[in-house]
Image (cartoon, rainbow, N blue to C red):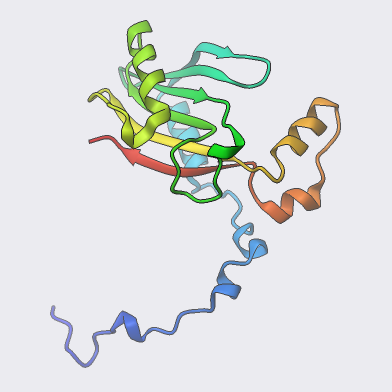
Amino acid sequence: MKTSPKTKKNYSEVELRPADEVMRLSRMGACFPTRLSFSRTLIRFFAEQKAKIKRSIWEIDDDGFGRAVYSVYLGGYNYSLVAFSTMLASEGRTDRVIAEAWDTSYVLYDGIPNKVELERLQINTPKQEAGRFMASDLILSRANKSVRIFDHVVDNLSNGKQPDKDLISSVGYLMRTTAVYGNG
């Protein structure tokens, strides 16, 4: 059935709500998980499929830097999240999404990487788009910590205290994903 020109809505004519109404932190934080949320759906799917999750590598030092590999056996296949945490100098830090260095970087890997693959990924993953990737490297991602609250949260939790709730609420994140890319 065709839409007649008289009933077709031109999206440029739709009145948008003002940004100060839509982008309020209190409004954005009002989205709580439901049984339809991605994370809950994924957990139920893993349980139904009897997925087996294993931390195959944990080479993270006391300062939180290094690499880790978590693997999941699902539907006859292995997939691994390969994670790298690197020291990011303050001059390499930016509050913009466009950057050349990140606190953490990740690859969703098809299989379980061997030592040679892990070394290749450790060289290339922190470079993100500037790195070289193989067909086994399914998804790339990266994230930066909040300069405003990260150290506050770590210091408080490591001393058995709760971080300042108002400070956390004013920022809204501890780490921020700056991109997720499909390889290829």
